[in-house]
Amino acid sequence: MRVQVLRQLLDRYSNLNHLESAIADAAGNIIECYRNGGKVLVCGNGGSASDADHIVGELMKSFEIHRPLETDLRKKLIELSTDRGQLLAEKLQQGLPAISLTAHNALMTAISNDISGDMIFAQQITGLGNKGDVLIGLSTSGNSQNVVDAFIVGKAKGLKTIGMTGENGGKLKKFCDVLINVPETRTAFVQELHLPVYHAICMMVENELFNQNQ
Image (cartoon, rainbow, N blue to C red; front, side, top):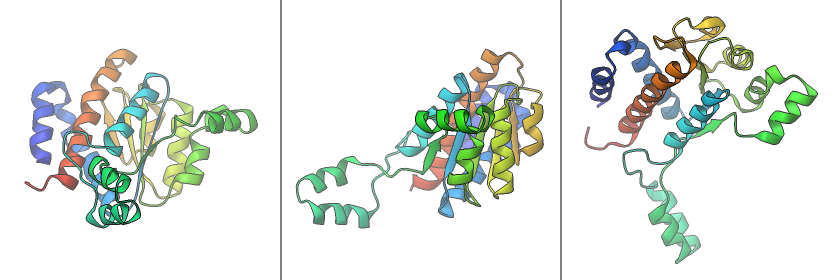
């Protein structure tokens, strides 16, 4: 299924053909992270901050595949509350742990005020990041200092780092385990290519972990 999703992406966006291995590696790292009980942390600025939130949204609930709760959790919910527990057991979906580092306004302003604005993501990595987790950073130029700093801390703590940038890769490429540098330089055009790439990655991850018909 991973191959099928990747082929669909490259059929629609042939200018990404040279990134086939990088995209497959990104999905593989995330799958391995989840199988080992880890989580995904995501960061970016501006439109890329919205992309960070978007990625988390696709991971934390069902994207294209039904994700029923684990049997043990369903049973415990029903035991705790025969009416509401039953509803929760039926409605809730199995989530994949993912956190957008752009979403904590009070924390980010505290870090910016007390430490440095460039370190709003790096400081969060010190508290949230564990060896084996995955850090995804989106920067169209690859030079966003707060994303670069997050990757430096992430590498120091043993996280796998996946960078999504424009063609050059910027300063970020030095700290990437996987670099997906789409072949555009204008911010809007880079972001237009980032979206189908991370959608495909999320599809590959979900299919691998939840599709019982593979």
